[in-house]
Image 1 (tube, one colour):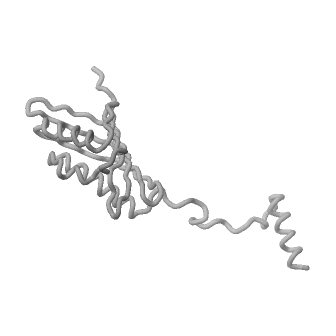
Image 2 (tube, helix red, strand yellow; image 1 turned 45 degrees about the horizontal axis):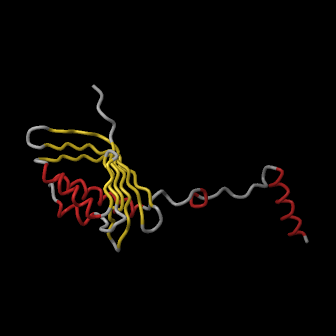
Image 3 (cartoon, helix red, strand yellow; image 1 turned 90 degrees about the horizontal axis):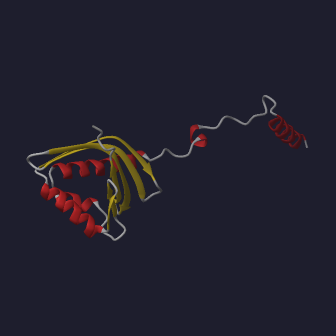
Length: 168
């Protein structure tokens, strides 16, 4: 009976806001959900973003190809121009790489968010310079990649890159 009275008194104290009746402070694990992305996911996805950067710099379709999902659901959007499905994306990449004499890519401020066990997003600042041998076009914008985990690999399922137009 005395134990029930103590529980009842604690409940009344908690409901009325009395000091000393509050439950123990929550631990860090109790207070917040798991980090936006576990360290392992962040490391793996950042590694995939670095592979993406390097593949562009060496102008290699062979290096870019394994980074993408090869299905009809793949979407790539560059400055509002949408390519859907692996074949359309492959054609775009091949044309870009073949036309460029040089490509320089810098990726910074990468933020990774896990979307469950098998998906993640990476948002980064992308600086890309493409030269045809005569003229260099440089742009800085936001790159958003949606990754899908296929086996132990992270593959790009969606890519979006946009940048503000340069004003005179």
